[in-house]
Image 1 (cartoon, helix red, strand yellow):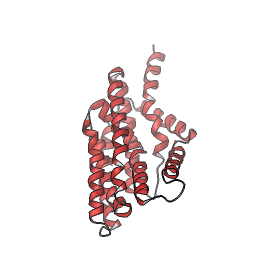
Image 2 (spheres, helix red, strand yellow; image 1 turned 135 degrees about the vertical axis):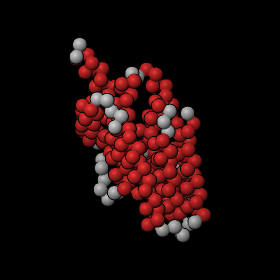
Image 3 (spheres, one colour; image 1 turned 30 degrees about the horizontal axis):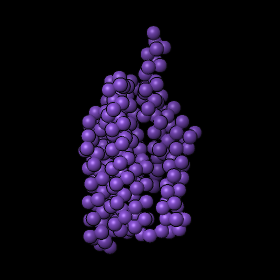
Image 4 (spheres, helix red, strand yellow; image 1 turned 30 degrees about the vertical axis):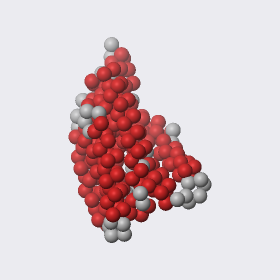
Amino acid sequence: MFAFAVNALLVVLGSLVGIAFRGRLSERLSRAVAAALGLVTLVIGAQMALEMEDTLCVIICLAVGTALGAAWKIEERLEALGDLLRARLSHGGTGSQFTQGFVAGSLLYCIGSMAVTGAMEGGLHNDYSILVSKGVIDGVMSITFAAAMGIGVAFSALPLLIYEGALTLLFALTGPMIPEAVITEMSAVGGCIIVGISLNIIYPEKHLPVGYMLPAIFLPLIYLPLTGWLSL
């Protein structure tokens, strides 16, 4: 259960490296490593997606879930939440460099689809490969962040630890109550979203709205029981 702490630990280690080599690391190097890790994330997402047993379920859940996410403006609300936290913690101004690093890191590492899908896989299947992969990516990013904004980035590992830990525990507690078929399709939908995230990592200039897709992860909870009832 505590493997999710690897993500937070890698953020701290990456931040320390960034501070130690402040001003000596090129953005080109960090970007190249992040792209390589994006490819690994792509493979993980594809493996999850290919485990689907009900293709129609995944298609419908992704289509309906994305439509709901767009209607609810999930990505815009997440961005607005980030702006609000940034303004509050920096008292409406630029704030200290420590605060800037803390807020920027917390938003980058916590507000994202990969944290949710990773916690889901960890809680339901004891599979922490997504969270570990996310931790490596976050660690690489924290090197450049800490090099620019200082030690505050390392302290953003604390809210990350609480957030991902709470999500993992929630999925672990609810998992025994969810039918295995539903869990399989939830993971498949999550895998498709992970593929989208990996493409955003590899091609940051071509943004896919994966935030809109988050509701799709939970729609198999409705779709499969409903189709089973209709087939009776």
